[in-house]
Length: 344
Image (cartoon, rainbow, N blue to C red):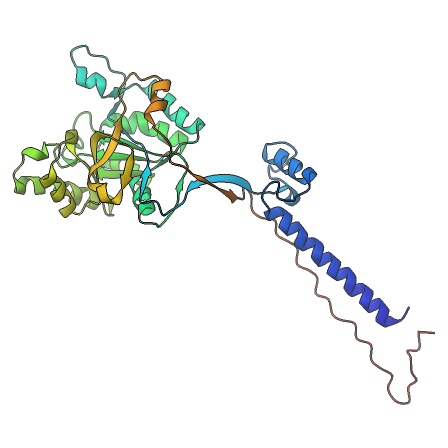
């Protein structure tokens, strides 16, 4: 065979190899069912479901396919997010304290509620996430929910927080700085620890007074002193607020905004939220004693989400092609004949 024919054959083999590698990459990135051979899809789904995976727990490169994931895309000026309102997480049953009973959710019931959220695809977020979404800066996960806990009771740290950590859930703790370190309330050190471990700390005034009844100077002190203390303790801005007992009016709402808060929650019932009403976001009160059937209905109608594709494992890394140098056949030089000595 002439050397020119050999060179062309080797180049063809290399081109076929490159095409095969590119086709493999396309298969790894295509959505399930989008023209992929059924056998490959079935095999990949089996690996993702826990079968057929190698000893290290990861599928082989050829078994990796994207999976469906749901998000709420940005651009909606108003969305549905249930903001659940908790107070105590404790065992409590005092026939003479109707309010205390109503504000107390038992630890077993709280555990069951968090288990329900996890099992049914709810994703706890915080107010930073909600504001960023409404500003168009990020998407939200499907079935978002915000878990808020009022007043800074000690049982949030000792009872609720371990359950939240077990589920890897975010939450918001509304703290009254004037109560910290007193009986039944968290300490400053515990608040700092919660902040460092993903719990958003927000303001609930300095001493939990009825803001509607206060003169302007005392109203301003309740709002600004609480925020200043928490920011000094935590070392970062605190811009979310909760009205004590849900009491507010237009003057109080204006004072809250003037004090630098970017959101404020009430005790009013509601699910829809926007930046336009960020100074009076409604919530959903969780009373003690609800069954899971009632709790599930309290979450309301979910915000529609859209499907995207994400990769559960790193994309396969295609091997680098070996460096190939072209074969060059020089023409016969004058006086040396017309073909190489080894070809006949």
